[in-house]
Image 1 (tube, helix red, strand yellow):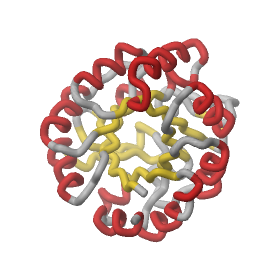
Image 2: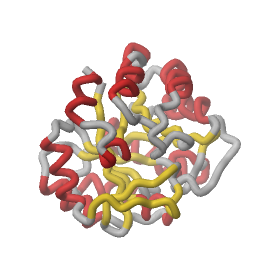
Image 3: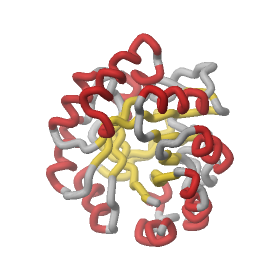
Image 4: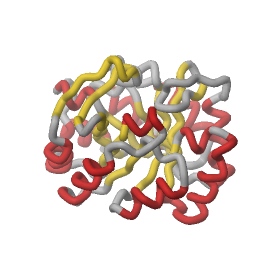
Length: 242
């Protein structure tokens, strides 16, 4: 199972939010490149980078910082936040992003065609992010709720041809309270494509608990705040995942 460090960008800084609330933002670094090198040197096999400003506005806002990260390290980068159109996806893949994560565009029916076009052109380089609050999907950087069932949506995405999902439990994200294991089990049991869990990982024990879902299709987990606070060391987390 992969342990994937998160680098959340806002106004060119590395930050972490509590439950996705932009008003509850903690700045951990003014140097995204140094942060990326830190996780690369600690053994990361993949970095999860999010343009938080782009997620809220719908337009890429931290692309320069992303490009600098990619140029500085050999570890592949997956990027989400603000990728609403095929052109957005093409732009980030052209600068070296390995995987483009589509969320809002994939989930809203009026923009579903953009996801379909991206899947045709880029195949498994497209990941869909499903962010859920109490089992229901949230949009626009988690600022809008919906009545869409998150697990049902994961099944729709599989039928559409998506080959990997990132499933985030908003209630636990950034809270250091442990992952929502029941929700992640539901996702894994609902589809036959790999799932990456996000939200709440705060200890080696949490990593080990998620590892138990690997036979059901859990590919990895994203870890954010716990790495920045020192509650979890990346080498220890990687060892626990293996």
